[in-house]
Length: 199
Image (cartoon, rainbow, N blue to C red):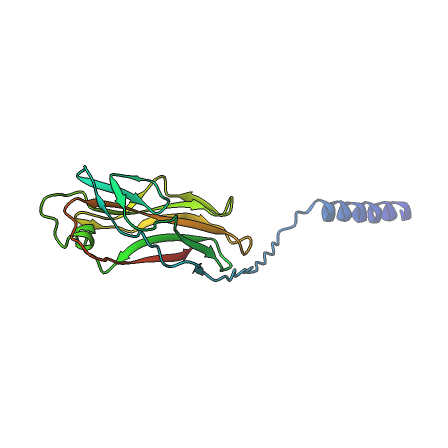
């Protein structure tokens, strides 16, 4: 009988141990945490040459003359010195920028050239951008894009993705005019504004 008792005790112990091993874990514990990252940066552009001088001239033999500060054009006779000129924009901030251009204080291009051109409707003021340092900007103007036409003003993207990798990331912005043949005589000037926003 003693053996039976010991056998029953051993069997009970083995059965209890097997039952313990086969039980599933029923509790679950979940923890979560918040991870934050804040990127700081500054948006800034510097213009190293804010004046563009076209000199003096007149429209010859056409409805309008095309005059570009990169020295290209047609139907324009210059009677004073005219050299290549542009606005040089430098990204001096610490962020990639989107840069736009607009005219200030004009209702349209006729406002600049004539006040109200009576015989033509081709007055235009445009900007044209190119990299001054290779790779400074992605998304330059495709050609001369109008910031003012004979009857409107527009914001124009000068540079969609202006890099800030080094101090020489820069873009040249040329100005192009369509000067109507009925433009009024006299010295004229206007203000162009460049606005930079963080990309």
